[in-house]
Amino acid sequence: MADLSRRSSLKLLAAGVGITVFGKNYSAHGKKKRIRLGGPIFDPWTTPEQWAEIHRRLGYAAALCPLQADEGEERVQAFVQAARQWDITIAEVGAWSNPLSPDSAERAAAVRKCQEQLALAERIGARCCVNISGSRGTQWDGPHPLNLTGETFEMIVQTTRTIIDAVKPTATFFTLETMPWAFPDSPEAYVRLITAVNRKAFAVHLDPANLICSPQRYFANGELIRECFAKLGPYIKSCHAKDVLLSPKMTTHLDEVRVGMGGIDYAVFLKELSRFPDVPLILEHLKTAEEYKLAADHLRRVAAQINVDIS
Image 1 (cartoon, rainbow, N blue to C red):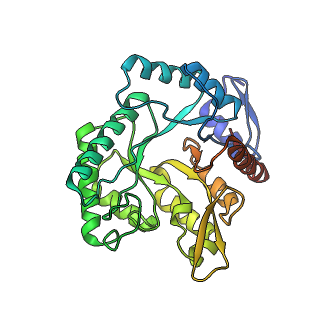
Image 2 (cartoon, one colour; image 1 turned 60 degrees about the horizontal axis):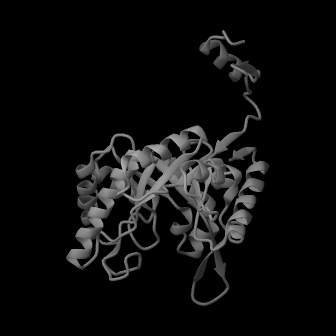
Image 3 (cartoon, rainbow, N blue to C red; image 1 turned 135 degrees about the vertical axis):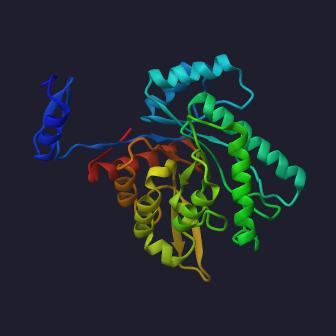
């Protein structure tokens, strides 16, 4: 059926009829949707090919950026080629820093780092460059009374514009990871930021675990995840995978734990994410290769139950 027209193919699929095009079978019922999983790797490597092979051996089709911003163009392109050959998506380039620091020198250095890492993301073809918005306090990722004020919201808008306008990316995006005590702290806050920043290169990095900051959100996290994808889906460029456990301690006590050991509804998360199949899902914050394997295995079991492919 290689000569089957696109319109005819769509009609058959709509009717529930499986067809074969260029050797691949497509079915309107039961076709698995793919999610690209990734995470840190622990095996040593020196060449782009070794780096790519390790990811594939672990069953990862997504990866964190392996290079620094000052890397030469020849080596950057070697990783671009290796990723392409091994069908690996470079999910994100981290720009972890505090562009809201009360120290002006630290703040300026953080903005420069974001610009440099965004430029690297553009060069290497990463889905996005990611940072948090920062903190008005001395701990770069910590809570502060000013973090969720209107003044800070405007600071984030102006800083984000400054970062994007210096690089003017066309192939990647600058994103801010969702956080419990800093903007964006909700789907609504992210929508407001997208509107206020008003730059095509500004997009979304989703970490649902970071949004769970109360028993109310903990027990209704499936609804929260659905809301995130309903409001932000087309803007989401990369996601993180971890879990949260509510302990029976006073007062409210939430701990980050390995995927599968907490309360996040991963059946909902994976089902929603599979609607946007180019978005990578990156495991993080574990200490050993064995812990990452256990987390990945749990995701694969959940995915199999809902007919979603993770690879």
